[in-house]
Image 1 (cartoon, rainbow, N blue to C red):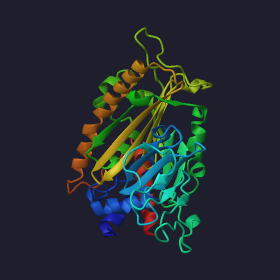
Image 2: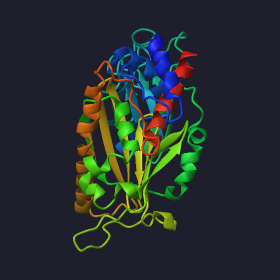
Image 3: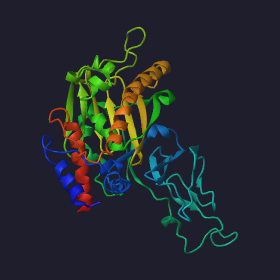
Image 4: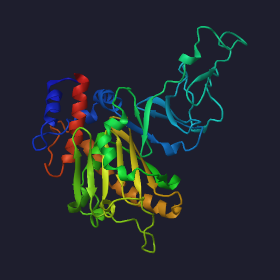
Amino acid sequence: MDSPTILNNIKSVQQSVDKANGLSNEHYIDPLMFKEESEAIIKSSWSGIAVSADIPNIGDAKPLDFLGIPLLLIRDNDFRVRVFENICRHRGMKLINHPKKIEGAIRCPYHSWCYAKTGDLISTPHVGGPGKNLHRSIAKEDLGLNEVRSYVWRDVIFVNISGKAQDFDDTHAELIERWSEFDCPMYHGGEDSKFSLNLASNYKLVVENYCESYHLPWVHPGLNSYSRLEDHYNIVDYGKFSGQGTRVYEQFKGKDGQAAFPDFPNLSGKWSEGAEYIAVYPNVLLGVQRDHTFAIILNPMSYNETMEHIHFYYATSTTDAKTRKINAKQWKEVFEEDIFVVQGMQSGRYAPSFDGGRFSPVMDKATHCFHDWIAGKIDAYRS
C-alpha cells in the first residue's frame, strides 16, 4: 500500500491544479486501498448515512449497514435523532433487522436484554440466574448501547465513526455560513420525492462528476439547453468543500406555467436565478434552489459499488404530490444520465498505464479540490 508509486501519486495530487495528476488507479480498484480509505477518510470524517425524514416520529427505528458496521437510527422521546451500534452489549447480537416502531424498549431477541430509546440498559432478565434479574458484576449504567457521534444538518444524518473529528459546526462553518439563508424549515416530499440508484462505481467518481459542470454539453444536453456550461461557476474551498453553481436557475413550473412550489422565505436576490450544488466531503451531495432542495447520500458498498440515495425537500408541507413526483422524475432522468460516465471511468481505471489523468486548470478546479482533500486525509492517516 505504501509503494513508492502510490506515495509519489499522493504528492502529485497535492500539486497545484495546473500541475497535478489525479488519484491513481489503486484508489478505485484495489480492495485493500478501499479498506484503508474507509479508515482514513470515511470513518474519520463526518459522513452521511441517512436523512432524519427516515425516522419522522418518536420511536421510529431504522437499521442500516455502513461500511459493514451495523447501525441503528432512532428518534427518542425528546424527538432527538440518535445513532447507535445495532448490537446488544451482552453477546453482540443484532437488535433490529427491519424498520419498526419502538413503543416501549429496544429488546434483544437473544436473551431479552432491553434498552431505552436513549440507549440506556434498563432490563437484564435472569442475568443472575432464574428469576434473578440483577447481578453485582453487571453494572447497567456501564452497558448502554454504543452511541455513534452524530449531527443533523439539512436533514442529513452525519456520523463520525472514529469520534475524533472536529465538531461538525467547526468542520463545516464556512459552508453553513454560505447557505445560511436556507437555514429555515424544509419538508421532505415523502415517498414520491426519493429514489435510489445502484452504481457499479467507486463512490469518489460520483463525487468528482457532481462537482463539475464541464460535462454538461455532452452528458446533459437537455439541461445544458437552458442552464448552459457558460452559465456555471466553480465553487472551491480547498481542504473543505467544492462544487458548482449556476446563474440561470428557473423555477420548476406546473402545467399552467406558474411556479409549482413556493420559494423558501427571506432569500436574497442571489437566489432569484441562482442555484448551487456542493459536495460535502466525503460522501454527501447537496443542491439548493429557491423553490426546492435535495440531498444525495452515497453509501460506499465496496471499492466498485455505490448506492446513491436521493431526497427532495420543499418550503411547505402542502406542495402538490403529483407535481413533486414529476419534479423527482425529471431530476432522476438527469442523474441517470451520469451513470454511464461514472461506470465508464470505473472501468477505465483498470488501464495499467493511466496515471490518474490531468485537470483543466479552468474547468476542473472543484474536482482537483476533492482529490487534494482525499490525498491530504490519506497522508495524515499514514503519518
